[in-house]
Length: 382
Image (cartoon, rainbow, N blue to C red; front, side):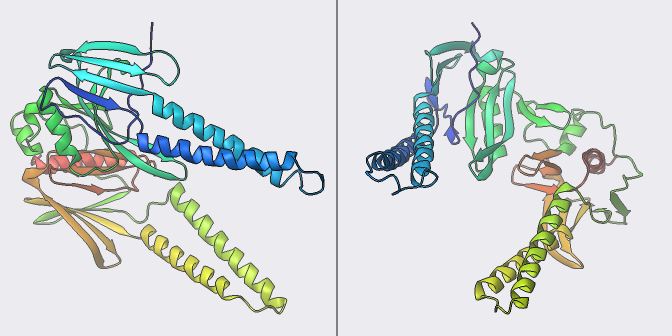
Protein backbone atom coordinates (compact mmCIF):
# COMPACT_ATOMS: atom_id res chain seq x y z
CA UNK A 1 0.00 0.00 0.00
CA UNK A 2 1.36 3.41 -0.96
CA UNK A 3 1.91 5.76 1.96
CA UNK A 4 3.04 9.34 1.38
CA UNK A 5 5.69 10.32 3.91
CA UNK A 6 6.36 14.10 3.91
CA UNK A 7 9.96 15.16 3.30
CA UNK A 8 10.21 16.91 6.66
CA UNK A 9 8.30 18.56 9.52
CA UNK A 10 11.05 20.38 11.36
CA UNK A 11 12.55 23.82 10.76
CA UNK A 12 15.66 22.98 12.80
CA UNK A 13 17.29 19.57 12.46
CA UNK A 14 20.85 18.26 12.41
CA UNK A 15 21.78 14.61 11.95
CA UNK A 16 24.95 13.38 13.67
CA UNK A 17 26.57 10.17 12.38
CA UNK A 18 29.60 10.07 14.68
CA UNK A 19 28.08 7.16 16.59
CA UNK A 20 26.07 4.29 15.11
CA UNK A 21 23.29 3.43 15.25
CA UNK A 22 22.03 7.00 15.10
CA UNK A 23 18.51 8.36 15.41
CA UNK A 24 16.97 11.36 13.69
CA UNK A 25 13.69 12.74 15.01
CA UNK A 26 11.93 14.94 12.51
CA UNK A 27 8.92 16.67 14.03
CA UNK A 28 7.43 20.10 14.50
CA UNK A 29 8.77 22.13 17.40
CA UNK A 30 7.19 20.73 20.61
CA UNK A 31 7.53 24.16 22.24
CA UNK A 32 5.60 25.87 19.45
CA UNK A 33 2.98 23.09 19.38
CA UNK A 34 2.45 23.24 23.17
CA UNK A 35 2.38 27.03 23.07
CA UNK A 36 -0.27 26.82 20.36
CA UNK A 37 -2.34 24.44 22.51
CA UNK A 38 -2.06 26.69 25.57
CA UNK A 39 -2.91 29.83 23.62
CA UNK A 40 -5.77 28.02 21.92
CA UNK A 41 -7.16 26.88 25.26
CA UNK A 42 -7.01 30.45 26.58
CA UNK A 43 -8.86 31.72 23.50
CA UNK A 44 -11.36 28.89 23.80
CA UNK A 45 -12.01 29.79 27.43
CA UNK A 46 -12.55 33.42 26.46
CA UNK A 47 -14.93 32.50 23.65
CA UNK A 48 -16.94 30.04 25.75
CA UNK A 49 -17.15 32.53 28.61
CA UNK A 50 -18.52 35.23 26.30
CA UNK A 51 -21.03 32.82 24.75
CA UNK A 52 -22.14 31.59 28.16
CA UNK A 53 -22.50 35.17 29.40
CA UNK A 54 -24.62 36.08 26.36
CA UNK A 55 -26.86 33.03 26.73
CA UNK A 56 -27.55 33.73 30.41
CA UNK A 57 -28.43 37.40 29.97
CA UNK A 58 -31.94 38.26 31.06
CA UNK A 59 -32.26 41.24 28.74
CA UNK A 60 -31.96 40.67 24.99
CA UNK A 61 -30.99 44.29 24.44
CA UNK A 62 -27.88 44.06 26.52
CA UNK A 63 -25.79 42.84 23.57
CA UNK A 64 -25.90 43.17 19.83
CA UNK A 65 -25.88 39.99 17.75
CA UNK A 66 -23.12 41.44 15.52
CA UNK A 67 -20.78 42.41 18.34
CA UNK A 68 -20.10 40.37 21.46
CA UNK A 69 -21.71 37.04 20.52
CA UNK A 70 -20.39 37.17 16.95
CA UNK A 71 -16.92 37.94 18.29
CA UNK A 72 -17.25 35.04 20.75
CA UNK A 73 -18.15 32.59 17.99
CA UNK A 74 -15.21 33.71 15.82
CA UNK A 75 -12.79 33.47 18.76
CA UNK A 76 -14.09 29.99 19.63
CA UNK A 77 -13.66 28.74 16.06
CA UNK A 78 -10.14 30.17 15.83
CA UNK A 79 -9.28 28.59 19.18
CA UNK A 80 -10.57 25.17 18.12
CA UNK A 81 -8.61 25.36 14.86
CA UNK A 82 -5.43 26.34 16.70
CA UNK A 83 -5.83 23.53 19.25
CA UNK A 84 -6.50 20.91 16.56
CA UNK A 85 -3.59 22.05 14.39
CA UNK A 86 -1.16 22.21 17.35
CA UNK A 87 -2.25 18.79 18.61
CA UNK A 88 -1.78 17.19 15.19
CA UNK A 89 1.64 18.86 14.86
CA UNK A 90 2.61 17.45 18.25
CA UNK A 91 1.41 13.91 17.45
CA UNK A 92 2.96 13.43 14.01
CA UNK A 93 6.65 12.72 13.58
CA UNK A 94 9.18 10.84 11.51
CA UNK A 95 11.85 8.78 13.26
CA UNK A 96 14.85 7.63 11.22
CA UNK A 97 17.31 4.99 12.45
CA UNK A 98 20.59 4.35 10.61
CA UNK A 99 22.80 1.37 11.53
CA UNK A 100 25.54 2.01 8.98
CA UNK A 101 23.93 0.02 6.16
CA UNK A 102 20.17 0.51 6.31
CA UNK A 103 17.81 3.39 7.00
CA UNK A 104 14.62 2.58 8.87
CA UNK A 105 11.93 5.25 8.57
CA UNK A 106 9.12 5.12 11.13
CA UNK A 107 6.36 7.52 10.15
CA UNK A 108 3.65 8.42 12.67
CA UNK A 109 0.94 10.39 10.84
CA UNK A 110 -1.33 12.81 12.62
CA UNK A 111 -4.29 10.53 11.91
CA UNK A 112 -3.85 6.83 11.31
CA UNK A 113 -1.32 4.15 12.24
CA UNK A 114 2.45 4.03 12.11
CA UNK A 115 4.23 2.96 8.93
CA UNK A 116 7.76 1.64 8.62
CA UNK A 117 10.06 1.65 5.59
CA UNK A 118 13.56 0.14 5.36
CA UNK A 119 16.03 1.04 2.59
CA UNK A 120 19.77 0.31 2.11
CA UNK A 121 22.04 3.36 1.86
CA UNK A 122 23.37 2.32 -1.59
CA UNK A 123 19.91 2.92 -3.08
CA UNK A 124 20.21 6.68 -2.46
CA UNK A 125 21.25 8.88 -5.39
CA UNK A 126 23.11 11.59 -3.49
CA UNK A 127 23.02 14.34 -0.89
CA UNK A 128 20.72 17.10 -2.12
CA UNK A 129 20.70 20.76 -1.15
CA UNK A 130 17.63 22.91 -1.77
CA UNK A 131 15.93 26.05 -0.55
CA UNK A 132 12.22 26.04 0.25
CA UNK A 133 9.98 29.01 0.93
CA UNK A 134 8.18 28.87 4.28
CA UNK A 135 5.17 31.02 5.19
CA UNK A 136 4.25 31.55 8.85
CA UNK A 137 1.25 33.85 9.04
CA UNK A 138 2.35 37.29 7.86
CA UNK A 139 6.02 36.35 8.00
CA UNK A 140 8.03 34.42 5.44
CA UNK A 141 11.51 32.98 5.34
CA UNK A 142 13.71 30.56 3.45
CA UNK A 143 14.26 27.07 4.78
CA UNK A 144 17.62 25.50 3.86
CA UNK A 145 17.35 21.73 3.57
CA UNK A 146 19.97 19.02 3.06
CA UNK A 147 18.63 15.52 2.54
CA UNK A 148 19.54 12.09 1.23
CA UNK A 149 17.76 12.02 -2.09
CA UNK A 150 15.76 9.03 -3.29
CA UNK A 151 13.54 8.83 -6.36
CA UNK A 152 10.80 7.53 -4.09
CA UNK A 153 9.80 10.60 -2.07
CA UNK A 154 8.66 8.34 0.79
CA UNK A 155 12.29 7.35 1.39
CA UNK A 156 13.94 10.81 1.43
CA UNK A 157 16.01 11.29 4.61
CA UNK A 158 16.28 14.82 6.08
CA UNK A 159 19.82 15.46 7.34
CA UNK A 160 19.95 19.18 8.07
CA UNK A 161 17.20 21.81 8.16
CA UNK A 162 17.66 25.42 9.18
CA UNK A 163 16.46 28.94 8.46
CA UNK A 164 20.07 30.13 8.70
CA UNK A 165 22.35 29.61 5.70
CA UNK A 166 25.62 30.08 7.63
CA UNK A 167 28.21 27.55 6.36
CA UNK A 168 25.40 25.72 4.58
CA UNK A 169 27.58 24.69 1.63
CA UNK A 170 30.31 23.31 3.89
CA UNK A 171 27.70 21.32 5.86
CA UNK A 172 26.22 19.96 2.63
CA UNK A 173 29.66 18.85 1.38
CA UNK A 174 30.49 17.18 4.71
CA UNK A 175 27.36 15.02 4.51
CA UNK A 176 28.25 14.03 0.94
CA UNK A 177 31.69 12.91 2.14
CA UNK A 178 30.21 10.95 5.06
CA UNK A 179 28.06 8.85 2.72
CA UNK A 180 30.53 9.01 -0.22
CA UNK A 181 27.68 10.09 -2.48
CA UNK A 182 27.43 12.86 -5.09
CA UNK A 183 26.41 16.32 -3.94
CA UNK A 184 23.16 17.27 -5.67
CA UNK A 185 21.71 20.74 -6.15
CA UNK A 186 18.71 22.09 -8.03
CA UNK A 187 20.14 24.15 -10.89
CA UNK A 188 18.69 25.97 -13.86
CA UNK A 189 19.08 22.87 -16.03
CA UNK A 190 17.74 20.27 -13.63
CA UNK A 191 19.44 18.35 -10.84
CA UNK A 192 23.17 19.15 -10.87
CA UNK A 193 25.54 16.46 -9.63
CA UNK A 194 29.15 16.68 -8.43
CA UNK A 195 31.22 13.77 -7.16
CA UNK A 196 32.19 14.00 -3.50
CA UNK A 197 35.86 13.67 -4.49
CA UNK A 198 35.57 16.90 -6.52
CA UNK A 199 33.82 19.04 -3.92
CA UNK A 200 36.87 21.11 -3.04
CA UNK A 201 38.01 21.56 -6.63
CA UNK A 202 37.58 24.94 -8.26
CA UNK A 203 36.00 25.51 -11.66
CA UNK A 204 39.51 25.92 -13.09
CA UNK A 205 40.67 22.61 -11.58
CA UNK A 206 37.58 20.79 -12.88
CA UNK A 207 38.29 22.16 -16.34
CA UNK A 208 41.91 21.02 -16.19
CA UNK A 209 40.71 17.53 -15.18
CA UNK A 210 38.18 17.43 -18.02
CA UNK A 211 35.22 17.25 -15.64
CA UNK A 212 33.57 20.54 -16.50
CA UNK A 213 30.32 20.12 -18.48
CA UNK A 214 30.14 21.44 -22.02
CA UNK A 215 29.47 25.19 -22.13
CA UNK A 216 26.90 25.98 -24.80
CA UNK A 217 26.53 29.76 -24.40
CA UNK A 218 28.37 32.79 -23.12
CA UNK A 219 29.81 33.98 -26.41
CA UNK A 220 29.71 37.64 -27.45
CA UNK A 221 27.67 39.63 -28.38
CA UNK A 222 26.00 40.00 -25.00
CA UNK A 223 22.20 40.20 -24.49
CA UNK A 224 20.63 43.65 -24.73
CA UNK A 225 20.15 43.80 -20.95
CA UNK A 226 23.93 43.66 -20.34
CA UNK A 227 26.84 45.92 -21.23
CA UNK A 228 30.23 44.18 -21.46
CA UNK A 229 33.41 46.25 -21.55
CA UNK A 230 36.74 44.54 -22.16
CA UNK A 231 39.76 46.41 -20.79
CA UNK A 232 43.43 45.48 -20.66
CA UNK A 233 43.27 44.07 -17.12
CA UNK A 234 39.60 43.27 -16.55
CA UNK A 235 36.17 42.58 -18.02
CA UNK A 236 33.31 44.72 -16.69
CA UNK A 237 29.69 43.56 -16.90
CA UNK A 238 26.87 45.94 -16.01
CA UNK A 239 23.09 45.97 -16.46
CA UNK A 240 22.04 48.17 -19.40
CA UNK A 241 19.85 50.81 -17.76
CA UNK A 242 17.12 49.95 -15.27
CA UNK A 243 15.39 46.61 -15.47
CA UNK A 244 11.71 47.36 -14.80
CA UNK A 245 9.56 44.41 -13.76
CA UNK A 246 6.24 43.72 -12.06
CA UNK A 247 7.74 44.30 -8.58
CA UNK A 248 9.03 47.73 -9.57
CA UNK A 249 5.65 48.66 -11.10
CA UNK A 250 3.77 47.43 -8.04
CA UNK A 251 6.00 49.45 -5.72
CA UNK A 252 5.53 52.56 -7.86
CA UNK A 253 1.71 52.22 -7.82
CA UNK A 254 1.61 51.71 -4.05
CA UNK A 255 3.98 54.63 -3.36
CA UNK A 256 2.17 57.06 -5.70
CA UNK A 257 -1.26 56.00 -4.38
CA UNK A 258 -0.20 56.49 -0.77
CA UNK A 259 1.24 59.94 -1.50
CA UNK A 260 -1.89 60.99 -3.41
CA UNK A 261 -4.11 59.86 -0.53
CA UNK A 262 -2.03 61.88 1.94
CA UNK A 263 -2.14 64.97 -0.30
CA UNK A 264 -5.89 64.61 -0.82
CA UNK A 265 -6.48 64.19 2.90
CA UNK A 266 -4.32 67.20 3.76
CA UNK A 267 -6.04 69.36 1.12
CA UNK A 268 -9.49 68.36 2.37
CA UNK A 269 -8.64 69.18 5.98
CA UNK A 270 -7.07 72.50 4.93
CA UNK A 271 -10.19 73.60 3.00
CA UNK A 272 -12.31 72.70 6.01
CA UNK A 273 -10.14 74.98 8.08
CA UNK A 274 -8.89 72.13 10.22
CA UNK A 275 -5.26 72.24 11.23
CA UNK A 276 -3.33 69.10 10.33
CA UNK A 277 -2.53 67.00 13.42
CA UNK A 278 1.06 66.16 14.26
CA UNK A 279 0.49 62.44 13.61
CA UNK A 280 -0.50 63.31 10.04
CA UNK A 281 2.87 65.01 9.45
CA UNK A 282 4.70 62.11 11.13
CA UNK A 283 2.92 59.62 8.87
CA UNK A 284 3.71 61.70 5.79
CA UNK A 285 7.40 62.03 6.74
CA UNK A 286 7.70 58.29 7.42
CA UNK A 287 6.06 57.49 4.09
CA UNK A 288 8.32 59.91 2.23
CA UNK A 289 11.44 58.38 3.79
CA UNK A 290 10.24 54.88 2.85
CA UNK A 291 9.52 55.96 -0.74
CA UNK A 292 12.96 57.59 -1.10
CA UNK A 293 14.70 54.53 0.36
CA UNK A 294 12.99 51.98 -1.89
CA UNK A 295 13.18 54.26 -4.93
CA UNK A 296 16.95 54.49 -4.39
CA UNK A 297 17.11 50.68 -4.38
CA UNK A 298 15.33 50.62 -7.73
CA UNK A 299 17.97 52.89 -9.24
CA UNK A 300 20.99 51.11 -7.77
CA UNK A 301 23.42 49.67 -10.27
CA UNK A 302 25.68 46.64 -10.03
CA UNK A 303 29.00 45.95 -11.72
CA UNK A 304 30.65 42.56 -12.13
CA UNK A 305 34.44 42.79 -12.59
CA UNK A 306 36.30 39.73 -13.84
CA UNK A 307 40.09 39.85 -13.42
CA UNK A 308 42.80 37.23 -13.64
CA UNK A 309 42.95 36.79 -9.88
CA UNK A 310 39.44 37.49 -8.61
CA UNK A 311 35.83 38.29 -9.41
CA UNK A 312 34.26 41.33 -7.75
CA UNK A 313 30.65 42.47 -7.48
CA UNK A 314 30.17 46.18 -6.70
CA UNK A 315 26.94 47.93 -5.77
CA UNK A 316 26.80 51.57 -6.86
CA UNK A 317 24.43 54.52 -6.69
CA UNK A 318 25.46 57.12 -9.22
CA UNK A 319 29.25 57.38 -9.00
CA UNK A 320 29.40 56.18 -5.37
CA UNK A 321 30.45 52.63 -4.57
CA UNK A 322 28.23 51.37 -1.74
CA UNK A 323 29.51 47.82 -1.30
CA UNK A 324 32.17 45.61 -2.86
CA UNK A 325 32.68 41.88 -2.45
CA UNK A 326 35.10 39.56 -4.22
CA UNK A 327 36.20 35.91 -4.44
CA UNK A 328 39.60 34.70 -5.71
CA UNK A 329 39.21 32.87 -9.02
CA UNK A 330 41.21 29.90 -7.70
CA UNK A 331 38.59 29.35 -4.96
CA UNK A 332 35.42 29.56 -7.08
CA UNK A 333 33.87 26.08 -6.99
CA UNK A 334 30.64 26.73 -8.83
CA UNK A 335 28.62 29.32 -10.71
CA UNK A 336 24.90 28.68 -10.92
CA UNK A 337 21.53 30.33 -11.05
CA UNK A 338 20.16 30.84 -7.56
CA UNK A 339 16.42 31.09 -7.01
CA UNK A 340 14.99 33.38 -4.34
CA UNK A 341 11.46 32.11 -3.63
CA UNK A 342 10.63 35.12 -1.47
CA UNK A 343 10.62 37.51 -4.46
CA UNK A 344 10.39 34.86 -7.22
CA UNK A 345 13.63 35.95 -8.91
CA UNK A 346 16.82 34.35 -10.11
CA UNK A 347 20.35 35.70 -9.83
CA UNK A 348 23.88 34.53 -10.59
CA UNK A 349 25.53 32.89 -7.58
CA UNK A 350 29.34 32.79 -7.57
CA UNK A 351 30.24 30.21 -4.94
CA UNK A 352 33.26 29.27 -2.88
CA UNK A 353 33.51 27.34 0.38
CA UNK A 354 33.78 30.59 2.32
CA UNK A 355 31.12 32.76 0.71
CA UNK A 356 28.59 33.27 -2.06
CA UNK A 357 28.18 36.55 -3.91
CA UNK A 358 25.17 37.30 -6.09
CA UNK A 359 24.71 39.39 -9.21
CA UNK A 360 21.90 40.23 -11.63
CA UNK A 361 18.84 39.83 -9.43
CA UNK A 362 16.71 41.90 -11.82
CA UNK A 363 17.86 40.40 -15.10
CA UNK A 364 15.79 38.04 -17.29
CA UNK A 365 16.53 34.36 -16.73
CA UNK A 366 17.77 33.72 -20.29
CA UNK A 367 20.28 36.57 -19.94
CA UNK A 368 21.47 35.15 -16.62
CA UNK A 369 22.07 31.80 -18.33
CA UNK A 370 24.22 33.56 -20.92
CA UNK A 371 26.12 35.41 -18.18
CA UNK A 372 26.73 32.21 -16.24
CA UNK A 373 28.43 30.59 -19.23
CA UNK A 374 30.29 33.82 -20.01
CA UNK A 375 31.84 33.94 -16.52
CA UNK A 376 32.87 30.26 -16.74
CA UNK A 377 34.51 30.89 -20.10
CA UNK A 378 36.49 33.76 -18.59
CA UNK A 379 37.59 31.63 -15.64
CA UNK A 380 38.93 28.83 -17.83
CA UNK A 381 40.44 31.20 -20.39
CA UNK A 382 38.12 30.15 -23.18
